[in-house]
Length: 309
Ligand SMILES: C[S@@+](CC[C@H](N)C(=O)[O-])C[C@H]1O[C@@H](n2cnc3c(N)ncnc32)[C@H](O)[C@@H]1O
Image (cartoon, rainbow, N blue to C red; front, side, top):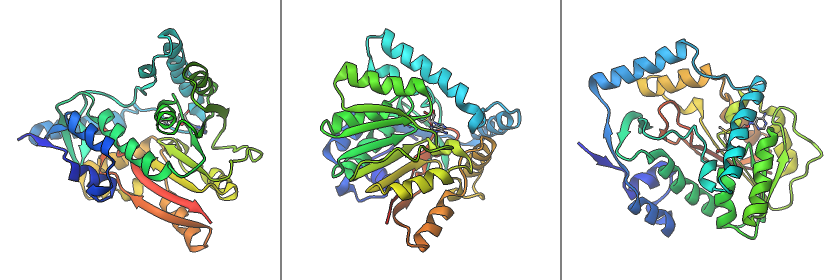
């Protein structure tokens, strides 16, 4: 039986009331195909077995310091494609948002009808998130900004705000600066390493910090960056990241995500670290929400929204 993600499902996944969805998000939900089939029976068994086999065969790269070369190569290719296409924004869509694969939804695997289901879902999510939390700040910093894919949406939503794209990869910084040159955006690129934050780099007053699928890359080594943020006192911090602590280890689909997450050395221990900081009255936690949606392998869109006090 074909199912569809409807407006109330989006609201549920974002952790809001349907009334809080902006008009442009409602239009995007209406204009895209969010039909899907739940994968069951032997097909589901095959899918899960294949994931475990890939994990055990070590087919996935491991996050951490040794990954720099891999990211340089990836963003170098995006930079070249962007330049050679005459600054075509579609060249910046990250290749890890895969089309035509099953995705995970409400702790099941589902097969979307539309090849771009995950990308289209993410575009709705991002618009809602940015409009809701970033309208009032003067500047926005995306740490681990990669291809600059999110910065384009930020620059279009908020043309007057300064938007910083921070990454440890030079090619990524180059893309951000080329975006400013070619499109007239107020984007600025700057090298920055989570493992060794530049303590001299100051965040402007009334700014927002966002990370999207970036702190996941730090394993257990995000403490220096967290301390840097607490000292820098941005008005708000938004982390959209897979959060291993929020899965249910007694659910098989979740368990596969936990195994994948740990195998890749994605980030661990963050909710506890943040809650401890809250108890010490160093931060205020505004929202923690598991995403219940994601790729074949992980729920990459869980929300931790907070601010240093
Ligand atoms: C999965 S990508 C996400 C990119 C972008 N935020 C997005 O949503 O498309 C992870 C990003 O984190 C960056 N990254 C990984 N380790 C980092 C570190 N130690 N310091 C800064 N950036 C890092 C990578 O270069 C890459 O751009």
